[in-house]
Structure formats: structure tokens, C-alpha cells
Length: 529
Ligand code: J2J
Image: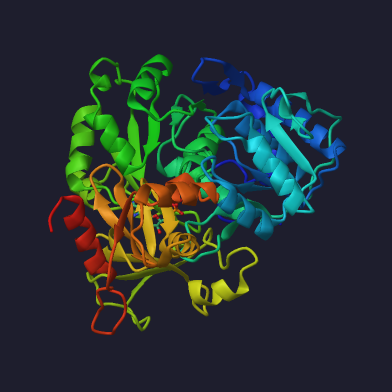
């Protein structure tokens, strides 16, 4: 089967073959550097992935099986990712900061045969979680840990796993290559099946558009499991060009800036709250950032003021990226006028991307007006993974994805994200379903009903505010947060602000007025009555 959407790059490949090709093309060049300064050439990365693929095969993992990865940005992440692709197993890209409820729900959905975890990163016991998951999910046969834990229980050690070359999988362009996490708007998680063909196009066409080249150095500072860092053009786009990826588990300014200086980083992808921390941090004054050639910002709305500040402070060009793991990627172009780069989120990557901006009845809005963005195209999914019911509401009958974003198009075809209709909170670029937070709260003792809203926040972009109608007695916000954590809700989904409310404000249609709740949350936080 062919990979039809790639014209100018070298021929498209199933993802399992990419690293072998890159090692052939750029063998001795440095593929990866970590914060300690350790370096891995393309050949070395390929050898490690090949060995691990053999080890996994010997341990019984087979092509077509799912393997969940919950790994931070370490060498182990990349070795595991490429080993799975080489074997033909399908990586399920969970985030390192997800906790039991998420992991459990994702496992119930994907039914993975393997689970890759770090050796105690931070203060979370991944091994204990893996043990519990093994007890609950029959199909989970292999737990692979990156590191050398003292008590590894039944886990396999990533660095020790090896075996003879495994068979090559026979993948076509339309076969699923990996599953990405969806931000979600419902109480249950959704996974996004990306194919070999569409994902190769995603990173290689993006790399071309963004001017990636062999002499570039990309800093992977956001989680590599996210579509932005992984493939827009990100890590895979960098490898496709023979560049170097600097990988770090710390996003803090005082560690990232010296790293940029030390490794002469040329490209970095940020979410707006992180970009803000960076420009407001003082450390850049002490670091030489003159190597930077492009800063990409995406994942959440970038205020024009912050865009200008970034340009002034970092002294290098800026690119806005409006993307979604479901597919569509929009970029401002490197040669766009400054006003376009500051005020718009760019235009689609592919000439074959179709965009419709529609009203509540799915009628196209007049040119220049704001409507919900529907999209269809060569690398946008037509359905979520194993979600037939959800798919009927998330896609139109003719296959357009309902993004839930409210978007306007300027006279030059650039999109401007004005808001959203989906019930989702965008906290530091991480997407949180309001329904999921509400369900978690409602399950707690003493909570009669709960509503979660995203409230504009200087630091986070949006913070989560939960309004609770208590059952009789007063509620204690600290105890509520602790109870949510204890029940395994991922930390980034735990409300930042908790307020009690006696009666819900209602809209004219007698629905809970979430906009009014946002106003109340802001007033209460600032101490207004
Ligand atoms: C406003 N909202 C934005 C932007 C995404 C590249 C970049 C980002 C993502 C991503 C991605 C935005 N301005 N510039 O996958 O490859 C919001 C929209 C969108 C949702 C998608 C990539 N960029 N958003 O953020 O799947 O609401 O992907 O629908 O995490 O983020 O979220 P996600």
C-alpha cells in the first residue's frame, strides 16, 4: 500500500521502518541528548530499539497487540517507542502525570498486553500501580520498567530485555500505528487511532513547513507522548531530518535555559503558560539563547501581548501552532507578516485539509464570522478507537470531526481561535473534561452535586474551579482535594479552586449557567462578595 500524501520528502515508510532508515541515513549523528549530557547516536538508538524489540518478542509480545507507555522524557521513552513500532505492537501514549483512574480506564479501553513505566519518577509508585493493574486487567502480561528498582516484583527491566531480531511487521499506510490520548469532553477517556500513513505525513510535512533540517537541535520540554512534542513536527520531525533532540524531564526555567545554552538548542515547542513562565523568569538574562531559531507555541490560546513579549525576550522568530491529536494542524508560516504571527493561529498544513465553520444547526457561517470548526482531511481521524456511540456525536455523517472549537477565518485564510463550545478545561495546555471532574466530585461523601468550570488564570491559562452543593454540612476544600487524589484522580484534574454554592444560577433555558459560575469564581477568588 502506498503513502500518497508525501510528495517532497524521502519516500514514506511504516513507522516501524523509520528508525532503521534514519540510522542508515544519519548513523553517527547525535539523535538524543539528555539533561545529564549523555548522547545517543542514531545507530545506537536503533540498536537499542532493535534489541528491545527482540526481547519483547521473546517475552511473548506480538505485532498488533497494544502496549501502554507511561514514560517521562528519557532515553527509555524513545527506545521503548521505537522498539514497539519495530515489533509492530501499537503504543498507547499515556501521560506520566496520569494516575490510577485514568490508567485503569485506558487499560479497560485498549486492553494492552504490556505496560511501560519509569522506575519511581517523582513520588509516584508506578510499580505498585502496575501490580494493581495486572490484578484487574487479565490481558496485561508484561510490565516493563525503565530503571533498576530494588524490588521489581514481576516487572521486566527495559535495559536488560534483549533477544534475536524479531520478524518485521507487514504494515500498510492505513493500519493503526499508535493511539494518542484525547482531551475528552465526557466522563470516559477516548483514544485516537493514528495510522502509519497519516502520522508519517503529520511529522514529515510539518518538518518541511517549519524548516527543520539536519543541523537543528530540538528541545523536547513538554511531554514527548503529546502529539505536539512528538510529531508537530517535534521529535519525529527532527529525526526525519537527521537533527538532534534534547530531552528533559524538567520544564523549569532555571534548568531549561542553561540546557538551551549548553546544547545550542535551535527549536522548542511550548504551551502558553510555560512560555509565560520563561519570559517572566529572570534566568534568560544569564543564559545565551542566541542559538534559538524558532519558538513554537500551541495547545492553548496565546495572548497577543505574550506573543510580543516572547519575540522581544527570546529574540527569535515565533510560530503559532493550533493542533489537535485528532489530526488537523494549523501553523503560521515562517515568512508570514508579524501581525499574522501575533494575532492568528495560522492555516492548515495540507492543501487537502477541509475546514467548515458552522452554527448550531451545522450551517456554514458567513465569511469572517465565528463558527464551530469542523474538519476532514488526509491525516484527521474519522472515528475514535472503539467508541461507536461517541463517534456519532463527534463526527458528522460525512466524516467531519467536530472540534468543539469556535474559530473565525481572516481575509487571508488564517484561523483565529475565539473560544470553544466543548465542555473542556484547558489547564496549562492539558485538556480536562468538566464532566469527568464533576463525576469524580459527585462520588465523594458529602457532595450533593458538583459543577466544574475553567476560569481564566494568570498562571495556568485556565484553572479548574469546582462548585459544590454540599449534602448538609460544610465542605472542606483541602479534604475534598485529598479525597480525589486518594481515589486516583490524576493530579492535574484536581480542582484548583473549590467553592460551595446554595443554588445554581440558571440560563433562560433553565440550564446551569456556567458562564455566570466563571464570573462568581473570579469574584470569590479576588475576595469580592
Ligand atoms: C487555542 N487553542 C488551541 C491554539 C490547541 C500541536 C499543537 C497543539 C496540539 C493540541 C496538538 C491551540 N490556540 N494554538 O495536538 O499537534 C486547543 C483546541 C484544540 C485542542 C486540542 C499539536 N492549539 N488548542 O493541543 O489534542 O481546543 O492537541 O481542539 O491536546 O487544544 O488539544 P490536543
